[in-house]
Structures are given as C-alpha cells and as structure tokens.
Length: 201
Image 1: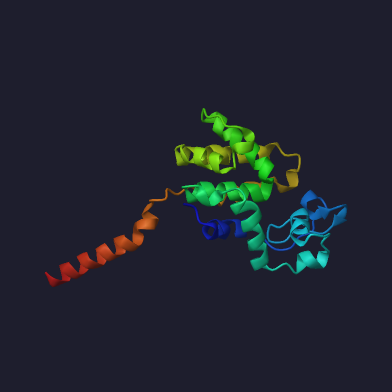
Image 2: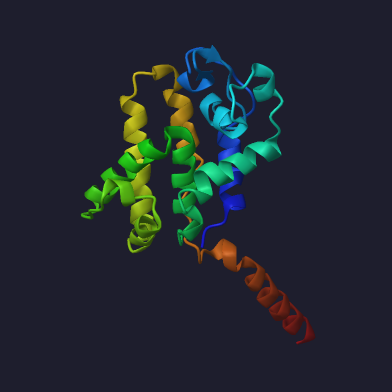
C-alpha cells in the first residue's frame, strides 16, 4: 500500500515555501490576501485554525504542521494510503493538493472513461473508489491521469503558471512497486556473495 512520506517527498518539492501572488485565487480568504505556504492555501489554513488567518499565521506556518494538515485533509481523507501503487498515489495526492479534491475527481473520472471504465463521481476517492482504481493496470492508470492533468493545465487561462505546472507533473514518474530499485538491497547482497566466492576461487 502507498506511503504518505514517500509521496510527500515529491509534493514537498512541488509545493515550496511562502508566496502571496495576488493573481493566485488560493492566496485569498474572505477577500483578504493571506498567501500560501508549503502547499497550504489560505482557505485550508482558515479551516485548520477555525478563524481567518493572518499573513503572519501563514508566513510562520511550520513545514511539520503543514505536512500534518496535508496528510489529514488530502491523503487520509481521500484514502490514498489504500492505493496499491505508490506512483499512482503520488500523482493523485499532488493533484488534490493542486486542483482540489473535487477538481481531481473530475480528472480521475476522465482518465477512467478513456480506459473504458465507469464509476459514480462521488465514489471516486471513497474506499469503494480506491478499490476500483486498484483493479486497473496501474501503469496505464498513471499515464491516463497524468494526461488528464496535463490537458487541464494546457487549457487553463492562467498562462503565467502553465510551465511551472507542467514541470511539477514531469517530476512525478511511474515506478512499479516491484521495480529494480526496490530489489537493489537484495541484489547488492547477492553480488557481494558472488564476489567473495570468486575471490576464494
């Protein structure tokens, strides 16, 4: 099953520190320009604090607290730990942070339709929906979702951010859970034993 920390290593790179670009709607809460920090938008921080956040609240938000919010609001709430492929989980997790949960449901739904599948929109990131996603060929699912996200970026009217958005997608790559990288510790032990054997000979 997918691990939050592994996915957060990628999303943490995609979502940097504090910024308050007035052209970014996620930086506002109730008309006030608050900013964004570590991937936490102004509305998300307001929900966490239970009040209107100040710029200082956002600027002083620690990375550790931000990760707690991200894990609770985007990872656990959407049952991403139940996805069987880490790369698919990272792609969806990065998507719900960037597009919002509802926006990511739309994109996953489009990917599923391309693959010949069908599921109720509201079930997509439920436990039932996660089990459904696990039935697909994971590599095909990954690239279908990635293409849906890429298409959304390219059609966006916010052309200033398109290059950055597409670059964040490039950083998320597909790896099978039984890839050679996962087997390397065992391979190195095997090669070490073989080396000793050859020296003896």
